[in-house]
Image 1 (tube, rainbow, N blue to C red):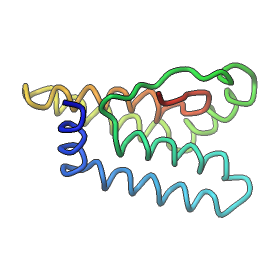
Image 2 (tube, one colour; image 1 turned 90 degrees about the horizontal axis):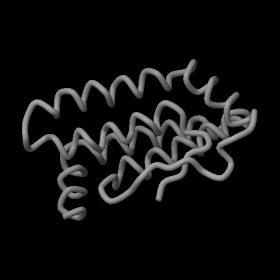
Image 3 (cartoon, one colour; image 1 turned 90 degrees about the vertical axis):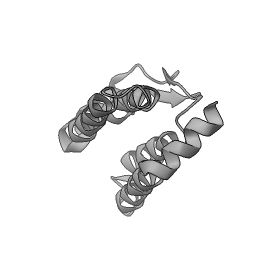
Image 4 (cartoon, one colour; image 1 turned 135 degrees about the horizontal axis):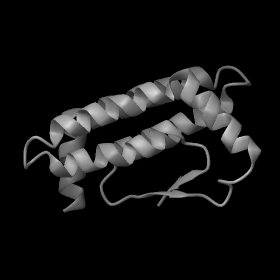
Length: 122
């Protein structure tokens, strides 16, 4: 069932979303300062590409001042916007019965796109 959900997800926008995160990660990795943020974009792109059957959990490095500082910078520089986009898509998909599993995937992506530092995908 996860395979079917992932294939439908890819066809109806998942591939383009992952491509957007991938291009954003490449642009951020051009500068030395942006490398940690670019790596988080790659992590989000991997989750957006194949979300069914995966979970977002707190990593072993989730505590400490550096992930908190980087998450604050991430939120201020666009993390709130990407999380808001995922919330809007989740609300739109929850309207139909067929869209509910896809809305749940968008809600998983809200957590990761709002504060990606200190999170792991399993």
